[in-house]
Length: 96
Ligand SMILES: [Fe+2]
Image (cartoon, rainbow, N blue to C red; front, side, top):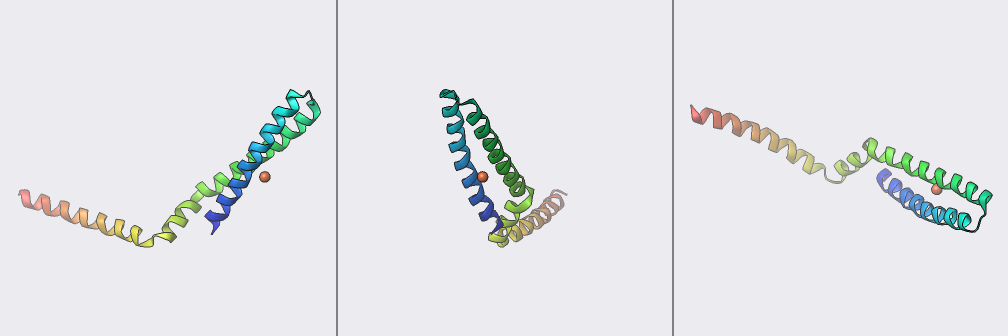
């Protein structure tokens, strides 16, 4: 659920970044320096919010969501690792 909320938040931030980026360019093109400056500040805030969301997602929330969605894969990987270790032992034993 946390991963979904972050994803939805980032979609909103990117939409806002696109809009404010365009507005900054338009304000500059029309010579509205003060408006461009204020719009740029807002664009910077949107970018900062997006960066915070990325930080949250990458701090382990994506991993937790993936593990929760497919807990059996994590168990299979552990079993495979154990089996591979066992096979290597057998192979070594077979060469002797
Ligand atoms: Fe925003």
